[in-house]
Length: 134
Image (cartoon, rainbow, N blue to C red):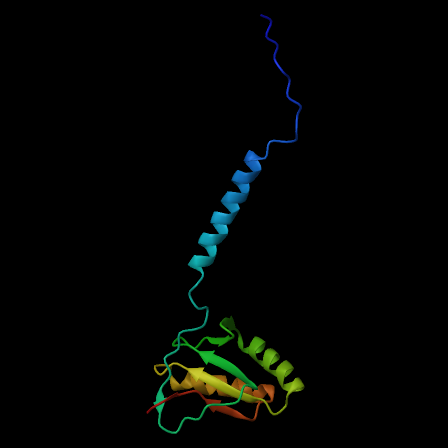
């Protein structure tokens, strides 16, 4: 008996390594996005007040932490950056309400500094954020 090997025609590239790479990328992104589920905002414990009122959505928020650092949208900014960002927003909406969110343990000096920066940028409608006591 004469057995001959049949030759297979080559159908294309081997995709096994490519599947391994894609699986690795899938696992990487799944792990990366489950780790980043924590909120990115600044943790500021506001003081409580009985007379607090909720404000409209047309507002600009400045957060001040215990060390006196100022934040806009969770990003730390310098005084010049705060004034520039606020001035740009005030050009679009001159009657915008500016809210200063300061931790209840912040030194008074830091709150006054944030209010001064808002006033220097041209903001005249401003308030301090509080948690409403019930």
